[in-house]
Length: 471
Picture (tube, rainbow, N blue to C red):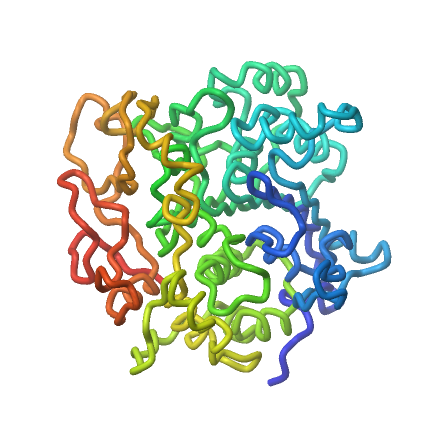
């Protein structure tokens, strides 16, 4: 059977088949991220979509003068494409300010961008701009999907909530949504990579994301196991015990090997292989097909860029084969070993490699830990007492001291924890197990995730009865 050009098909087939709804897709990039030489999964995902914005197309490499070699889906230069799928891309916080011309004023622009990157000063403007765009573009029957990375994830998640659920610290945003109340529309899918919980001067309390949104069908979250920075703690979706909403959002949160940008993308240059970020990118795409979102992808690019067989994704999502066994040369790399041997360029995957082959080699890629690579930037924050919130201990003021993230699973009742529903097991992608079982170039020994299971501070092990390995 030959592979289709797009999946699902652009047009319905048959005389009595109703035309499919239009997809309205919003993409929110991470802090300081835009279209450059080390793009995030937000852009990588967007470029695989039918009718993606032309601004996402590759440009000329500034260093070589040669065209960049991104694999991208064809752009549709007609109104026909907009009848089926429309994509809106927004640069990350710190790269632009919505609804303002002040960036044209000398001095203000660079200062504003720097402050914005540090504390997301203009976060609410990003959300309000996206909300206005949605109200202007939405047509009855549209399927709305939102994607984001880092603080862009926070933007995507905020956009899917009603004014009543917005955190009390976001006064400006809450007032805006109250003034612009419209008929509630259904959000089909929210997919995010490693949402961080510091937006603005105040670290969020988590109250914004504790229960299912009444208008959100599906929520998917890829989370970094090895991010340790105090200002980059993850913001999980916690379900409340007393959540009585009619619609129960389908929530799935899966942990992946790597630090923040190893999961959301942007830690390495665009053509680098292997790359840890490709694993959560493939997972997110598969979840879109599992949940029948109707998002249209370019089939050939899924195959050539990521090794994903279109016939295994549509019309039904087929079960994945078992992971490939480790080979003699399956060795986990470090940043130092890659820089020394240039081993990333020796990755054997090609445009015809299978998804399992891609997964095997991507799982061995280096982790880019900013507390090691740029310790001089982040080290001081590890020593400061910072306000944090989690569903077990409530609000705390403590220094992080370079500790990994806490994963709450199978939590016994407590004053704070009894308000929430905790999973009996933590969901970890099976590629993490592959990485843990492989030999390593790290002198400390085989890979062990930086995150620990709570309560008790256990490390994640390949045979832990608290871990559910997922694909």
